[in-house]
Length: 335
Image (cartoon, rainbow, N blue to C red; front, side):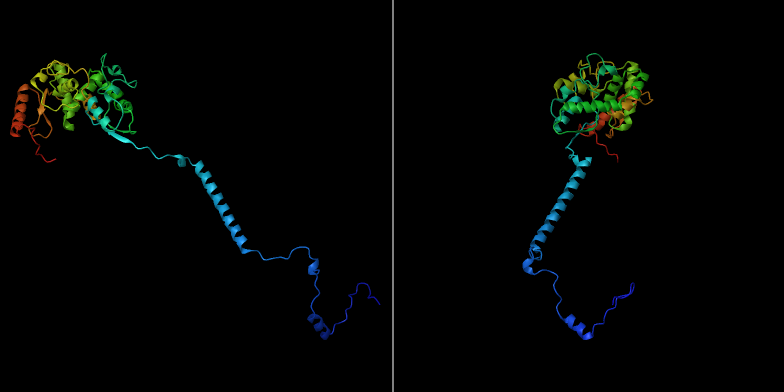
C-alpha cells in the first residue's frame, strides 16, 4: 500500500551483517572496459620538455626587458651624446706681437700662417676705432687669453676668437674714456700696448701711462725703447729681438723710433691685456715725465719730474749693471 501523500517514504533497515558484506565487495566501474576507450592512456609529462619550455620563457622575458631598455634609452637625449672631442689649449700671454703669437699657434699644432690670417677680418675694422687709413694689420686687437681649439684647427679660428674676446673687453666705456683723454680708441689701444711692454710690475702701469700722456701733451718724444725693438723685429723678421740696441738702431728713421719722432707710433706694438687697457684709460694723476728701471733690479721703475732727477736715477742703474758684470742687477728683496 503506498504511503499517504506528504509522508516520508519508509525504508526497511539493513542488517549490519549484510551491510558489511556489501562494503567488502568491489564497487562496479563506471568506465567502459579499456578496449572501448578511443583516447590514448594519460602519461606523466616529460621533465625535459618542461625545462626547455621554462628556458624559452626566460629568454623571451629577457628579450622583452632588453627591448624596453633600448626604447627608454632612445628617448633619453643624453644617450646620444658623443664623447667631447679633444681640445688644444692655446695660451696667448699679454704683450705678445702677431709674430710671437704665430709661433705659439704653430707650437699648438694649428694650421696656416697666423701673420697672414691676422692682417684683416670681417669681424673688426681698425677704422671703426679711429685707426688711420691703410692700417696694415690687426696688431693690438688680438686679445690675449687661453683659447680652447680643436686639434689642427686653422689659425683663422684663433684670430676670430681673439677678436670676439676683444669686443667683450673693449667697449663703450673704453671708447668714452679715449674721448675724455682727447684720443681715439685706436690711440688709447696704442698707449696700452706700450704700457704692456714697459711695465714689469702691476703698480707701474697707470704711472707709465701718465708719463706717456704727459710727454705727448708737452710735445716731447716718448723715448720708449720698446717701440724701437718692435721696429727691429718687423725689419728683421725676428719675432723676439733680445740683443742690445745698437747706436744705428737707436737713431734709425723708423716711424716706430719714439726717440727721433714725436707722438705715438703708427700702430700698437703689442696686444695688451685688460690691465694695461685699464691703465691707459685711467692713467695716474701724476706729473711725471721720466722713468728708468730701479737700481735694485726688482722690476719697479723710478719716476721723476725733471731731467736732472732722471739722470741721477739712470746713473744709479748703470752703476748697478756694472757691479753685476754687465748684467741686469738681481733683486735681493724678499717677495
